[in-house]
Image 1 (cartoon, rainbow, N blue to C red):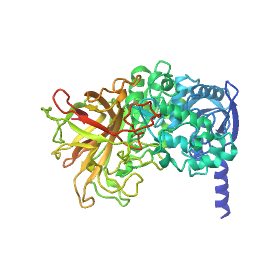
Image 2: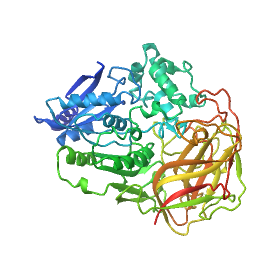
Image 3: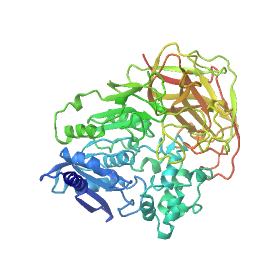
Image 4: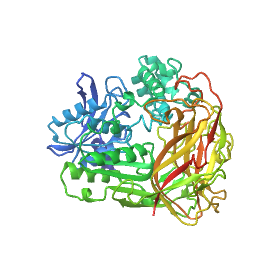
Amino acid sequence: MLRRATLLLILALAAIAQTTQMVPMRDGIKLATDIYLPKSEGKFPVLLTRTPYSKGRGANAFSKAMNAAGYAVVIQDVRGRYDSEGHWIPIKDDPNDGFDTAKWIGEQAWCDGNIGTFGSSYGGATQHAMAIANAPNIKAMIPRNAMTNFGRYGMRHNGAFELRWFNWVATLGNAAGTSLAMPAAKRATTDPQAAQALADFGNQVQQYVRALPLRPGTTPLKFAPDYESWLIEAMSHSDHDKFWQDHGSSVIDHLKEYKDVPAYHTTGWYDSWGTSVANLNFIELTKTKKSLQRLIVGPWIHSSENLDHAGMAQFTPDASLDLNAFHIRWYDRWLKNIDNGVDKEPPVRIYVMGGGDAHKTPEGRIFVGGQWRTENEWPLARTKYTPFYLNAKNELTQAKPSNNPPISYQADPANPVPTLGGNVSSQGTLMFQGAADQKCRTGFWLCKDDKPLSSRNDIVVFQTPVLDKDIEVTGRLVVKLWASSDGPDTDFTAKLIDVYPPSKDFPAGVDLNIGDSIIRARYRETLTKQTLLKPNQPAEYTIEMYPTSLVFKKGHRIRLDISSSNFPRFDINPNTGEPLNNNRSTRIATNTIYLDPQHPSHIILPVIP
């Protein structure tokens, strides 16, 4: 017993940060920074992350593993969060703060001049911010599931607003209901007496997203003025201008400034940042930088590379990733110059979902199955981009359209289509992540029954006949929709679904979501300038869903749902054309989908021969 107790004590002591320092920034603000050093003496390559989620949260295990591999680890609270000074504005100060922190690290006696960056989500954004600022000493990066280009996808989304960010701010960074809630609330408010009200506000997000717009001084968020003013601005500022382009981690808008450094980009098919990571950052950085860019995409939900499932979908046991080994191998190559072959491997590794027998697992999931595959590029050069057309018989077919009559439906802001799974994160109690059967369930706060979503009159369903062979779809998912509305503005949504046939385990079959997206009609022409609609005049809408890799099995159907809401994944369009986040009324819109040769609505599927 004594030996075991002594061992536990040693492990506990080894897990404690050796020092915490307040590192000064160029404007005098000091940021709280934990430093973990290997036990041996000397200079070490350094691994750096900058986080809004409290520097000590979950840091010990990773730091110990990296220390054992010969790396020093530095973890810093970003400006205005937890133990750091200053005011929080998401990512806005992180280019300069990241630059100053990297410079400071390079001047320390324990640093050998080589820094690698790590971190997921917001921690991925702070890495991109450092690269945009050309921070010194950065030699390698692993931006996981990075919050980036968020004026295009992830925060604003083709003009709509992703309400998971309302939850993020309302819960002061996902802290509601955790031990970090009160420290976050006390740090955010200028009135200590209001901290409890702020902490409680995070448990009321369902009520408040139903009561939008958000106006100044009308909620407990008024006690956290930095948070309130930023959220109102983000929900109101719709044009993709300098506000979004220069918000700190918009890689796509700062390719020229971006540091030329080896980066391994990671994301998941059900991740909330998949489009930005795979379809924007990886593609454009590969084109413009000499340093190696690598991409891995698994079947994961957000920041969950350690899992072998995503929501309802169960994959093979090897679907999960050993993150410590993954990091060490990349850093060893670029920070220690160890020739371990990682730079000679194919640049893209993807998990191709599908192929499983669809049995029900002990956890109640459906076995989707899948397998890993390496590729030489993204998107795949051998892709056969195949249009599947929508027609008046509610079919999805490769046959070009004939003179089909249009289909109209009503979009009622008071009765939005509920979000069932998908590419979300920071969702709190608003919704749930990943793959989900597209059938309502009475336990979900937005469902009044347990009927399939396909039974709703405001969803227009198009599906293929039963497939007579397997079809692999890997790459970008783009819908070209011809549509109109009887009002000045509305939304159009698209959702791709894998329709499983009935089975012993699932007698009603399963309608499994694969990808989704939205476009706000006033941004149909460009994200930089809004143009209201001319009533009942057809226009073409490009709706790009998050990418995927999936084998639609023989016996399944491919389904595309078109509607005008997906709540609370996206905010509800009042259909009035009023300024965003400032409407005083709502109206039921009559929206129309066109299906004729002059208006050939279709989805382009990236079929792999």
